[in-house]
Length: 284
Image: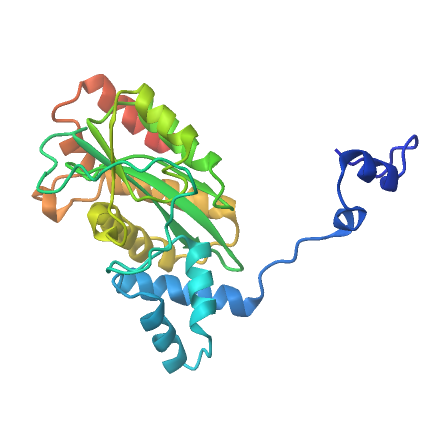
């Protein structure tokens, strides 16, 4: 660790000992430009409304709105945002080299009871001057959000926090994800294998396989995120915490015959588990 005020060693000497460039020590990360923030926010809105739009169509929409931007820039932004159009073709959610890919187990299979199938996904959440990322794990049968977490980067640890939290509550039969690098990483897969979970991964270019989570993102964004201009990651976390409690325990769900996800999730689970989940939701 570099210590600017260390009297025994100069910054130059410390940098040489650590094998890093001295110039890098004076680099101060620059915040994203207002133009980048605005374009990413608009891409998020377009994608949330039309998740089948890929980079080509999103670029056309932006240019029609006088946001002059090239397709390569849109593609780069979409990669940084972790999104891909629900359509055959290039997929921006790619596994890292040498990461293991598991087959898709849910073709012609419907979730038929709580903890039968869980899905996990990551989405972009806008802030006033930037963005954060949200990961959530949802029970497909009840639509119950078992666990979620946010972070300012797309690094792996926040995903593992959500996975650990979910597995501390229960264990699904099948756990589904896309083939993104988070979900093909050894740290992630080891947790699922240790829990004796059957691992399922969407086919490339088949984001629709995780449609329940895509629908959750629409609800989160239209009912919470787009109604609030979060000023900071902390404010976003508080807002999302309130929303997920509302979504799980208070919001009637049309597809569930107007029951709440928590009520349906609790049907085949112990009363103690239901109480634990309610407490967990309010504490996040």
